[in-house]
Image 1 (cartoon, rainbow, N blue to C red):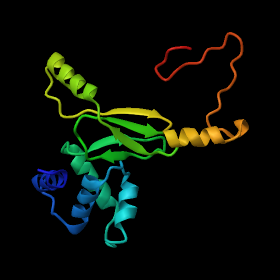
Image 2 (image 1 turned 30 degrees about the vertical axis):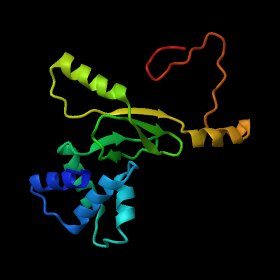
Image 3 (image 1 turned 135 degrees about the vertical axis):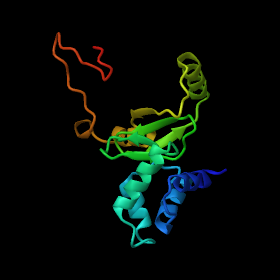
Amino acid sequence: MDRTEKLVQALREAGLRLTPQRLAIVRLLATTDQHPTAQMIYEQLRPDYPSLSLATVYNTLETLVDLGVVNVLGSAGDDAVHYDADTDPHVNLACISCHRVIDLPSQYVHALEQEVATTSGYRLLGARVVYYGLCPDCQREAARQPAGGRRHRRRRRRRGEHHQTQSGSEE
């Protein structure tokens, strides 16, 4: 069963009518290699489906997430929730500058999933591994900008002052 069929089947099992709008949302999610937000889906489909509402997009996404056939990735530094219809184990890389999210297949994610399932006794339904950083394009762009115009400048620390990392440890 391909990804589109899997998502359509999930909507059927949830008892939702398979309207042209819902089918378009499913097709877009199943065929994109991007990780769209609800707003992106709405804006992309609206020209072809003038009766499509943003509420329909959100409700369809919520149903698909609740059924476990779409993952919620959260923000990519843009304060918007991104969605991923690829529920197979993989790593997501999110750029905090351009907000692009890409997939990175990894044999280690599969091994980690097996270890977690075996060690915990859980029947795993899914997982999300998201790394945040600057993509190569944004790194090149930052390198081209003059030092005073860089977005990610580090403040010079005074003597005895420590910087806390996101994990809470001090540098």
